[in-house]
Length: 440
Image 1 (cartoon, rainbow, N blue to C red):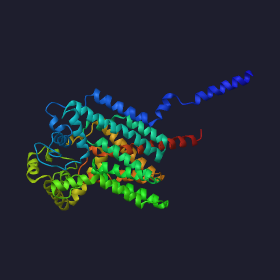
Image 2: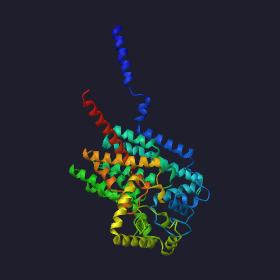
Image 3: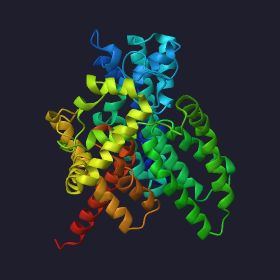
């Protein structure tokens, strides 16, 4: 009996040791990673006083065009005047985030520190929620281990929180919305629930009203889901039509507004011609030149004010096209430079906001790891490999022909994080496999 009792005791002790600790169980909860991410961002933001703006700089440096438009909305002037003075209705930026900023201004004060803190806290919330979409995307495509590590790295890495706690802009919101759209696209493949398709259309609509550049991905995401459903002999035409209908319903009010105030069709925002010209001119070097922007250049602002926003952007776009056609070799060279800067980072001394030395290392390392992870995911034909490839290969093209900025990469960095983590794990697994197979 004593031996049996000791055996039972021994087995019970062994069973207790096999149970994961409270810490390990907690780390396996994606919700905890999101809560930790939010707490960490709020702590760093408050401790470093990133919500403080130098006196006299609030008028434009807080949110730049977004802040100025939000000021106009909050003071009853409508969606207008993106630079200074009263220049009338605008479509210089997409509407979703400026209206969010205006709402905060209304409640906490225009350009007040309380408003800035709240706006950065909201950015931090969007960034923290991205932990959950990162986890879900990675789990559905590359497994739970990659999902957990990706979510927690996003939560704690300083680079992942940079834009959320320092920039009053739509960057963190766009990253969250894009990751949500990708997650929904992954689920459309097997979902017969119409609500899922409607949510996908609604999310893409919010994405368009936040950052229209990301819409280049929408046809690929929807086509991928429809292709797999067609192969599985599942209905796809009606659900896809429903998703597109919800998308169009969500963006149409803004399109109607643009037509009413400008007298012509303007899709979401109308400054692409200006963006194209800022990156393509006789002395261009592949980087954004602030000195040519209407917010910094008195002559350009005067032209903007005199011509009106839409005609001004159209004329700058015409000039850019003339330059590209007359300098094809230079345009090709500039495009290659911009692609390099997009993935390697812009130099700080260039006159456009660049990266510090430490952030350069992380920036380039994440690029290398994500590209290696993408190659591995494609080679192994992992679920969602096509969607990962589209993110890396299609979305940045618009910045190759205009100009790069470190911020423009952030919307796809959650998925880059997943690819990088996957590559590290697979590389480590291969190394261990090779080591164990070698003779002692």
